[in-house]
Length: 406
Image 1 (cartoon, helix red, strand yellow):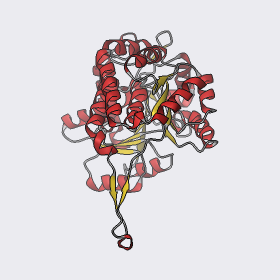
Image 2 (cartoon, one colour; image 1 turned 90 degrees about the vertical axis):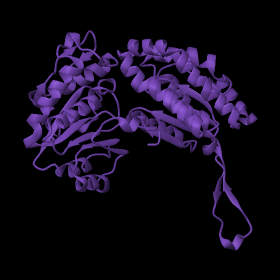
Image 3 (cartoon, one colour; image 1 turned 30 degrees about the vertical axis):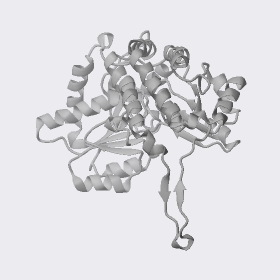
C-alpha cells in the first residue's frame, strides 16, 4: 500500500498530470472503458444489487458517459487562468488566478451506486490534474472486482490506482497523509474520515445522506397531472436502488385532505411499475446485504410503525427483497422518522396546512434535497428562502442529479 502511494506522489511531482493532453487522454480512456464494458458493468450491478439494465444505464453508465463528455468539453475553460481585479493603486500590475491540482487524492466510494460514486469523483480528480487512489466499497464485491481488474487496463497505472479491501484497509488509508479526501457514505463513517483528515489538515469532501422530503402542495384537478406527480414520487423513492440512495425521497408531507387520494395514486403506480406480488417484483433492486435488510425489517417491528402500514410490508429474506411499503403517519419519534431510511419504506406525514411543511423540515437536519410538488409561486419562494438544503427540485424528482451544472 505504502509503495503504491509513494509512486502516486512521485508521479505527481513529475508534473505530467498537469498537462491538458494527459488529462484529456485519461478521460477519453475512461469513456472507452465504459463503452467497451457496458455488459460487464450491467452484470456486476445485477450480481451485487439486482439492478435492471435500465436502472443501471440510467443511474450509472449513462450518468458517467455524460459526465466525461461534459468534462472534456469544459476542461480547457476550467484550467485556464482567470483574470483578477487589481486596485488602481498597483497600476500597471496584472493578476491572475491559476487553478492548480492538489496532489494525491483518496476517493472512498459507496456501494449503492458503485460505478457512479467511484468514477464520477475520479473524473473530477483527473480533470484537475491529480493522482488518485480509489477505494471502492467491498459491500458491492462484483463491482469492486471489476474496477480493480479493469481500470489498470485503460488508465495510467502510475497515476491512478485502485485498492480492494474492507474497513481495515480503509482505516489504514486514513492514517496516511493525503492532499484531498473524497468520501461518500454514512455520517457515522464521515465523522471518522473528518477526524483522521484533521490530523494532517487534509481538505475533505463528505457526500453524506439525510432525510430528503417531498412536499405535495396540491393534486391538480387535472387527473393526468395528479398521475404525473404520483409517478415522479414513486420513481424518486423506489427508482434509485429501491430507495437505498441519499437523493431518494425519504418521506412525504401532504395535507390531510389529500392523503387518501395520494396514497391510492401511489398504490396504482407501484403496481404498474413494479408489480404487486413480492415473489415476482420487477425492475426493482434488492437490499444490499442481510445487515441492511434486517435494519429495515427492524424499523417495521415497532408496533406503532407496523400499525401505520397502508400498503406493502412483505419481505423475502432469502432474496433480500422488501416490497415497496407506504406508511401513513408513523410516530414522529420513531426511528423511521428520526433516521435516514435508506430503503423501500415511504412514510406519509399529514399536515393541517401544507405551509407547516417548512417548519417540519426546519426541525430536522438540513436535507440533501427538497422535492416540492406545487404550482404556487409564492410557496415556491418561501421554500427557497426559508429552508436550507443541497438542492430544491420543483415538480419532479432525481433530475438534479443528471444535470452536471448542479
